[in-house]
Image (cartoon, rainbow, N blue to C red):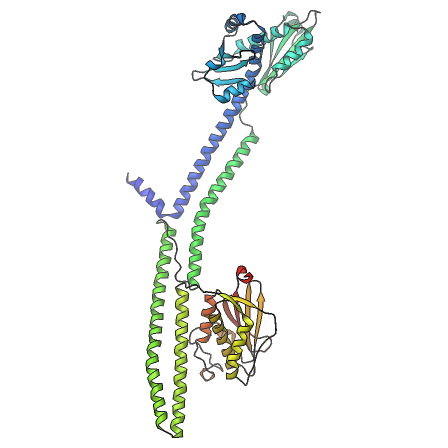
Length: 546
């Protein structure tokens, strides 16, 4: 009993074992369906074969009964029952326990064949007339006695009419299985002396072992002394399903198996795809992303581990950002006191040397204030991105935004040529305040390192907005291009502390673009020869159409 309790747990804890078990169950189910399909098709074909075989003798019995007076029918049925070794009887249609569809088939002139539990068959056929009745035939088996008797009865029925009407009677008895033909030539292979001894309605049987079939021949005479032969058959034995039909069923079942295996594997793949998507979002900084955990198998445990990792990283990052914000806010108070004290000292003295030093102190305080603002901005961007805060985007006129940035920075860099390259109007779906901050940081960085010229270019594409900021400065070495976006990163050459900046501007640009789902990159300017910083901002089609 313990093994039965362990197995379900093993299935719930192992994804791949569950997949294997499901595939095995699918194979068993497909095998069972194959057996069921073959059995059902074979049963229908056998039923149809039996009804086709019974069609001719039941039509013969019905035609003979319909030609008899009602008073003679019961005696005729008893005679034929004794002669053929079968049970024939007449019943009222309402007395037979038949279903709706069976009655409908009888009404259309078909013959019903049902196998009984004790062995043998029961045949039904409706007789035409003012008061329709049901002919019922019971037989335990179909042997030589019944075959010969039915053939002789066929011959007697044909002998009762002139030769010219016999073909019409045979036509009434034809079915899909039994073929009847009236011919003037005797059967092949029959010795002449045997032909001479044959009498009317005597039966000759010809076996066709290579085809698993046989044919019956009846000799009929006419008043003019001529002879006719009735060929019944060939009667073929019931054949199992043909190879073509079995192949078709096999292909259908293989297709079903393929669909079932696809659904099973697709379920596992979908769960793995969700894990991949969650890991990708977490790697992109969306630390609020969580995986929906279902069950206790390998993939579920992997999802729980991924959720725990994201929670831990989010907690550590949140603590770090809270500390940065707290330290930055705490720095403002002493900085404000220093600024206030410096202003008081400046108001109390007229010494040019002291005033010059106080102005330097004030400049350092202003630089420190700006650094605190940069740190707070960087911490706020990291917190909002990690906590999954959704951007409230709107359509931004990029040319107007660039002109505002140029207007703000040009007075600080009057020695430079700062301009916007001509082009078409470009609109972008973005958060206008953060996008302008990112662009302003790039332009300010270019102005600090340019020798004489800074150019901004806009490129609008169907699903992308590109903003290039180029300068004619020394550029960024290829080996250092991946480092300059790290916080407080500085180059050792001309992009050093004397050129200004705090090492957070480009980091803030990268945070803003990542929050928008875009990116920032740097390469060499093909026109000015310095550095070219590029903002790539993806656009959804619906947002651009609005």
